[in-house]
Amino acid sequence: MMQGKEPVDFRVVIDRDEAETELSRIFPNERFPVRDILDDLLKYHLLQNRSVDQIEFRHQLIQKYYAAEALLEQLSKFDDEQLKREFLNYLKWMEPIALMLGLVEHEALVVRVVESAIRVDLIFGTYLATSTRAEFWKQAVS
Image (cartoon, rainbow, N blue to C red):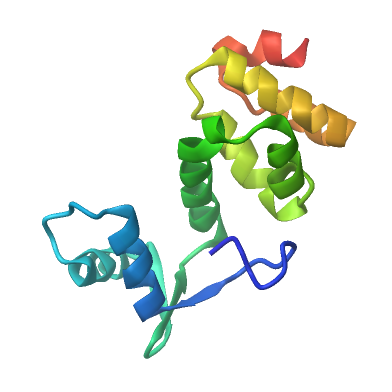
């Protein structure tokens, strides 16, 4: 849902059918029906109905956290140029990337992302360096 029609667009609402399709893609071996998973996300107030056939995250920060987790899973697949082109150049990714850096367990990966961000924008890179886990903070800042 972070991707709208244009790269700078932030998508707030998604059709329920599209959400079910994405969940099926993400969890192909899930033993529970996707519809039940989606209903649980609604029941526990992570998502809410916008209309009969559209849903949205209850709070934008929840959306950004899930975006951070999804980005973390894919991060090692991106080279530095792709990371800059598709994520670091867009303001909408600032908080998800900062959240993601708090989840990264490998110092080299943290340093790589921070260095790439500094090449895009010094202030953004500094912000990311201070968003890392405590044990990586010194290396990321330096």
